[in-house]
Length: 444
Image 1: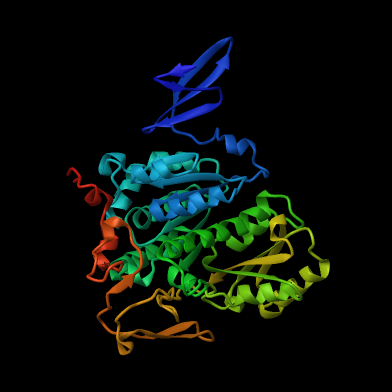
Image 2: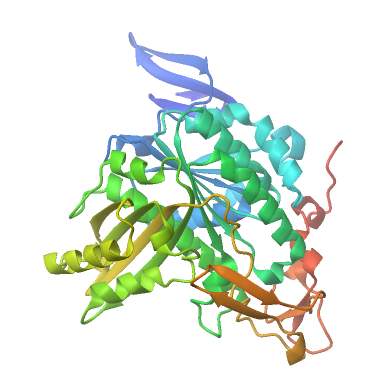
């Protein structure tokens, strides 16, 4: 059946510009009803492997990139939703469901790297946001902090989710140092606005990911690094609930660790060969992303992922090792998932929760970046010392940051130097809004 040019089938809801129609077959006739936008007839939900409804909402461009990565990796059993002010970005999204934030305010041209615009856009789209969250038991919110849509929009969506009594976990990234002081400031302010509205908050500093990267990592590859870790943070938890495994968690167990948990950190370790389990556990505990010691946590979740060759004694080794470093009153839950592609390797995903809310999320890392800097005097480079025992960072740096020289950049960021093949990027270039790049202006 066709209605207004769109083909509609039974049990299908078409969300178009905030309007929706439910079509069903009754008494030999098709019935068309105007309804509020709803995501309750999600085809993916019919294939869900668990009774619990888990949704992921990616906000802004950075969150959208991570969501596309999650979809390409084949994460199943959860509802995946993209929300953005930039219509071009939404067109590139692989998500089944998409929300245009602030369509009247921004006309689909983006938030201009201004968090206040992203916040206003999300507030304009509250009916669509509530519809997207409808029926969820747990929601993951993800965004790259420091821009406009994600930074301004994700606190609004989180507040709505909490008001709907949904277990709300946010997994966000902080920008690379070379992206500039402005994005860093926006990110920190956005994270502070987000914290009161989520049960658990995992912050992934992009600079720390570079500590796990190769020295020759390209710029495009560096921007892709956060996508994998955001995916691991989400998949490491949801697989234990939504997919049959060797040892599964009840949703109640997950809720015990995540509910009102506050700050959270994650670590990932992977090893093969002799003592692979202990090696993977130690690697996860010592991961640069574990910014706070696990023994200071009030809850810890461990996901053991392996092929079908996992031995009972290996699981016991991992569990005992973790329990030995935890306080007696810590809630420790774990499960085992199967991934036949690991082929002899084992992977550990740790999520530690419940750290002191008064702790400031560290801003600097012991290694600001491994991206090559040219013609920068040694005395002007930053020196950062990371002290694991106190989880504090002592940083000495010049007030004026040197210009960062990269080997690649998108065309609209380019300002070529006299040296062929080198591109110099000014800090403010990272904040060029979409409508500026397109030569358009927003109406007032």
